[in-house]
Structure formats: C-alpha cells, structure tokens
Image (cartoon, rainbow, N blue to C red; front, top):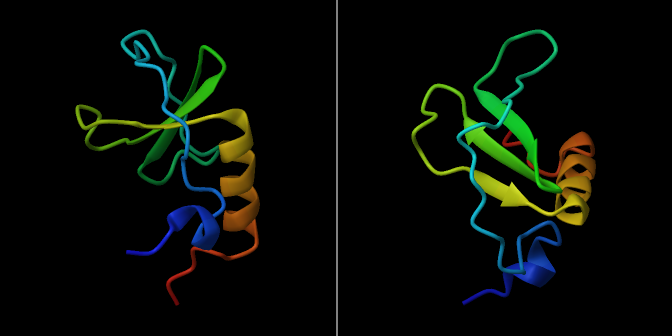
Length: 80
C-alpha cells in the first residue's frame, strides 16, 4: 500500500476535531457556480459537496488547506 503522505503532501495526516457544522456559513465560488462549498469553523476549513450537504465534509487544517489550494492552482489535480 502506498504512503499517501509522501505522494500527496496535502493529504490529511492528523486527527481532526469533531466540528459542529450546523451553524457553519457555507460559501461557494464568487461566481456562484460549482458544487464545492467551504466554511471556516473553529480554525479549520470544512469542504463539502453543495448538492449533497447531508454527506460528510472534509476537514482541513490551515496548513493542509494552503497545500491543497497551491496544488490546485498548479494543476496537480487536473484529470485531463
């Protein structure tokens, strides 16, 4: 089995707190398109599928979020 911490430096490695997301203020892109929503809660960043808000959210620490955003900007996750 591959070690995801070396292959994907943005991968979550630390256990996250069980955040209460019921009062979270979810935001989507500035253009209002897309299915990804994020919320800033208790020093963490939560990300969920906007069309399926009942599904679990991914929780990122600020360092993980920064690495994820930089990777996305650099095309690390492009499937084409």
